[in-house]
Image (cartoon, rainbow, N blue to C red; front, side):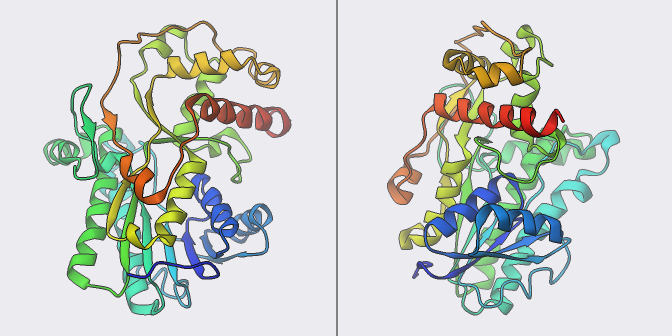
Length: 352
């Protein structure tokens, strides 16, 4: 199916989010125009100031509401759906995860697809931000996950434990069910557009979204911020589980290339740089010896060696390189740029 071309208009949902602002910048850099959905005028004005004249916005207060995107999709040629909750604050005493997390994720995804089918007669492709959480199962170290795999383990755990399931499980369920709903929609409804999904792990990198205080950090970066602030002991850091990492700028490029490249249609894309531990991250930051980071975070731990034998499974990102042409930023650059961005905000915004 023909892909989106330069000069086209792309609808970007959740445009004020950490990832989405980078996606908006990359869309404009690649010669596309952007219509973002935001929850308030203040958020929209902030993003427009960051992105520039080829960005405009419409207000969608609740993406889970029926017909939420009907007007927004009119006249657009492509859709990048990044709006979805990312937190672990559901389950047990925190509330019903089905209502707090799972339904909003699934309904937001199906609502934008329904709108694109019914009111977006010019839409050629929809790219959806999914997650590695929809791919990985509880596999041993050394297993390499490809896009052919789905996270059945979390679905089974949630079916068994219900609202008592831990927050990381319910989050993974929300991403898995939302992505499955998208592919099922395409199969059942046979819209005139096709789909692609982007499945990133932890996303770090520069923070350029509106973030008046650290509470506005996305969940992934908030973990690193707590480490930089000295809120975790070196022993706690050394025991933090291994994970996968990718830079937000690469994830933004993946979204845009998935819109622009014809052969990206009907594909899932793992986007991942490397497996890592937080001990690795602290070592990389200290190795750069950046005075600005040291000044902002005087309690930042040093000298953590960690357990280099604690390696998790791998996430195979070969398809993203071959089809989307991604060239990943190296680990040291990703970690340093994330810490440097946090240091700048800590010094110039949050400490005042």
